[in-house]
Amino acid sequence: MNALPPPLDPAALGLVRPDAAGLGALAAVVGPDGVRTDEAARAAFGRDETEDLCFLPDAVVVPASTEEVARLLALANARRWPVVPRGAGTGLSGGALPVAGGIVLSLARLDRIRELDLENLTVTAEAGVVLADLQARVAEHGLRYPPDPASRDSCQLGGTLAENSAGPRTCKYGATRHWVLGLEAVLADGTRLVTGGKNRKDVAGYDLTGLLVGSEGTLAVLTAATLRLVAAPRTSLTLILPFPTLDGAAAAVAALFRAGHQPTACELVEERALAAVGRLLPLPGTLVGRAAMLLVELEGDDDETLLGEAAALEELVRDLGGDEALAASDPAEQRRLWAIRSKVGEAVKGGSIYKEADTVVPRSALAELVRAARAAAERHGLQAVCYGHAGDGNLHVNLLKGDLPAALWRERRDAAEAELFRAVIGLGGSITGEHGVGWTQRRYLPLRHPAAAIGLQRELKRAFDPRGILNPGKIFPGDAETAPGEPC
Ligand code: MLT
Ligand code: ZN
Image (tube, rainbow, N blue to C red; front, side):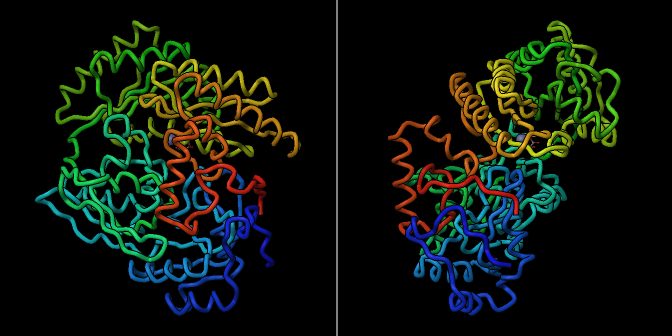
């Protein structure tokens, strides 16, 4: 297969694509089976889970150790090759897409849990460990590593670190960054860097750990991390709260926190998303035709306390016009209720090409956010479907193409999305709550940050990666203007 020209011209960024001799040099570092240039590999590593986008890399390289990562980066830096670090490719903002061609660097072989420290309640694991495996391992000891992105069964730790991933439990526990005590990383020139460690407190100098978590593969390649653990709660209760109005559901979110509840998760699914999931699985009758539902997860150490909390919550919800709740404490029943929320993405995105905007606003503006999303979409003849992490004010807004011709879809999508993000900023929000800026949101960064703040971030990028080899084209808008990318 001939490579399609990358939509970002590497030459405009001072970069070059590896030639045959370069590929040979890569093989000398990782061995011939650590470099793949076949069509299947390039196509598979040319996409992630971001919409229908695909960009072909020149090669996929799979090192087996931090030492090999360091040697690869030293080589790539000397030759100015673009390098795109990659976990399992479950990202939703195009962070792992090789938009300037070059090398995709898969961390999949760095898959060891190096140490579980039961004295200090930490785990040190490599970037390629699957998140669910890490969580299962610590759960054997009654412990929890809380971050729970929707992709946790397949995503790799390194990807979650690079994206500062979140998920439903962020509501109680905070996102990935809150759980990282230290990192092992490799800088663009091959220098190895260790930040933090097992100390719970450490204010010696700038917080490089905090900076690298969420840097989306643009500052360094993260190869391992030391993570904080907590005791897993002994019991839990899942509540589904149906509402006849969106305003009632939004008011309930604010009210339940104000009343002192600390749910592990507080998720919202509005009526169009409910209708979509109802096409995928049977919905309980009480949800059919409802304007919105909340899913609230309560956790604790004894059932009685949880039941008392649930009763108080249900009363609060009824006062706000909510309907009778569905409750489950049996794990199989809990999974059935959770499926209504966890299948939403698949249900909404499965039937059409779509564009997902990862919006976040202060909790009090949730209902306004949904209205603004619907209005922006409708002004351009599109539909907006919303769901997400209401407890964090973080809703995923999906615009659907349906049977619109491609050119018209692109035009309307871009106009509606830009309007939506302007409205989000007007509500005091941001252009991404958890999916990252990556490739798809970069053009909106100036809506979120003034030029001085973007300038400072560019300076940081230059300090870490003077030649700009790491994940070029991500986060910052207008490095060199780009085509949106096409299916391949
Ligand atoms: C979710 O909350 O379901 C995930 O972030 C994935 C998605 O947006 O579909
Ligand atoms: Zn989400």
